[in-house]
Length: 145
Image 1 (cartoon, helix red, strand yellow):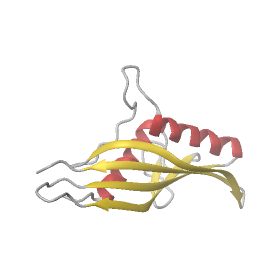
Image 2 (cartoon, rainbow, N blue to C red):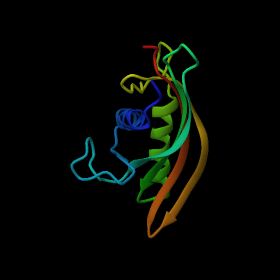
Image 3 (cartoon, helix red, strand yellow):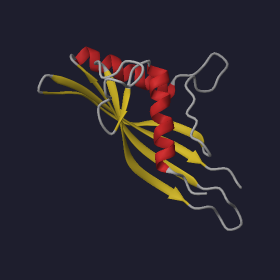
Image 4 (tube, rainbow, N blue to C red):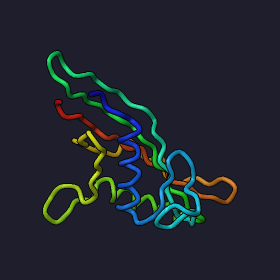
């Protein structure tokens, strides 16, 4: 099975929420009803930027993908935006006391085999809203059927 971008994106968004304790929108700002913090600043927005997929080799059913994401951390001050970006970075890269990642990313039918920060653009401001941009790569595989 090839990697399904939407499935991975939704699981990544859920992991960012769990790991940061703040709301995260998918392609847009979270709405007031989103858990756990609605559209209260600070929050994050996850933007899928595409990726590359490779089909399974002949005789194998599993596929692999390298998925690129942008996470924009939004705050009302530069400090708040950077604080949210720190929470995002910890959710992506933080490890647990027994090893392994502290925040699992569990897309149905897929396994995240690696993750890394691709680039950080830092803080910018527009119309009094501060944002901090982080790009993340997830390496994903699908199991053999």
